[in-house]
Length: 207
Image 1: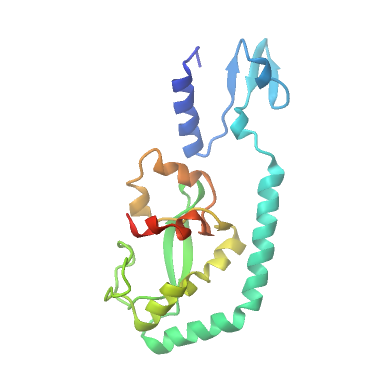
Image 2: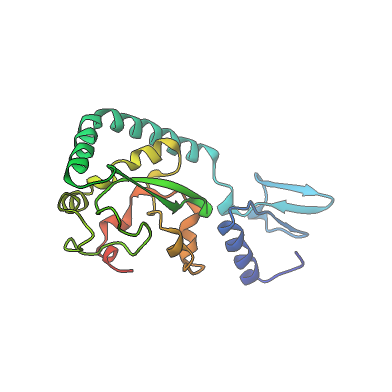
């Protein structure tokens, strides 16, 4: 890039992050604090990755190890309860025990999320989520599952497979992601999770 103001560089950096694309800056003069590890000289020009994009690989590696260890342990320990909940769902209303839906993960990549079915068969697969337990789409057992968040337990499979993490922003349905603003799309820069700040906030009741 030719000499650019900080606002231009910030915009380019945000676009690259949203696309999941590595970014490096090339300049003739680089501040001393930006030189060092992560910078190389190419034909008299300084090539440097932005500081916030030079994260150590061992953080992602350690987080993944924790996700695999915890999710596999919980799947084994909770297996009897998962089987019982699935059986109760099958006996409570017609249809499968698991609900599979496409969600947007890291960098917007789509994956299949697994949940215990809490609604009646015939309910549109992609629609605005219920905000009240009295929603007629929800089965009697589904009300209990959603209130206790037990319907989310099958997502431990997604964590084990690498589609999700234990902690992170909730993965949204594609039609909602299509409405995201630039600020909203920053959520897609990290791995979605089963739980996070949103689950602990009263703002979860808002769009």
